Length: 258
Ligand SMILES: O=C(O)CCC(=O)C(=O)O
Ligand SMILES: [Fe+2]
Image: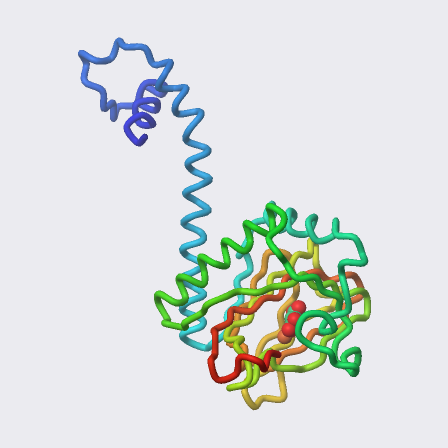
């Protein structure tokens, strides 16, 4: 491909760095030009996104091995975020239920702690499938480099309507949950600071947040589930996200699930 590309450049711009031997200059350039135009942009895009994914994976691994938390503003590009957002907002309202009442919790005081509505991803649409594949890749990298023993990833769409919140909490208690690593991916376009809805993350014992994260579309937050208490502040517009957890099979506590 490089050869074809430099051939195109050298012929069309008459470069002094002409790489073509004199006796081979009179063959037709048409097929070469066609190849360049068709394949360079596509290959370029693929290479960029694979390279981007590898870089972000490296950053995530570094963050989890170091402070245990990381914020990655461009984890997914605008098109992927738009596809996921569209997938979420296309769901009929009855499929999006008050959080914590469905799969794992039956807490009657729940609405004092959180008021968001959720829907588990099941991989039934192309955007969900693509996202789950990306997270499976990340899981593999985390296991390879940090030996985390992650077995599974579960995630749900979450919608916080205006005024909704999630009070300070931990996603997992040591020895009582299979959840090891929390991820939150935001799906909001044009989010501004005045919209509120920040995620506040606290350190082990700190009363003041160590991180304040604006839920801007494309941003991924990733942290050790047992280490960082956090809360979601109310927003003055709808706030969309995918919250997810990498889990291990913990034989000590198979029945106790947060
Ligand atoms: O949406 C967020 O920023 C965090 C959500 C969260 O803490 C959770 O679902 O457990
Ligand atoms: Fe949480």
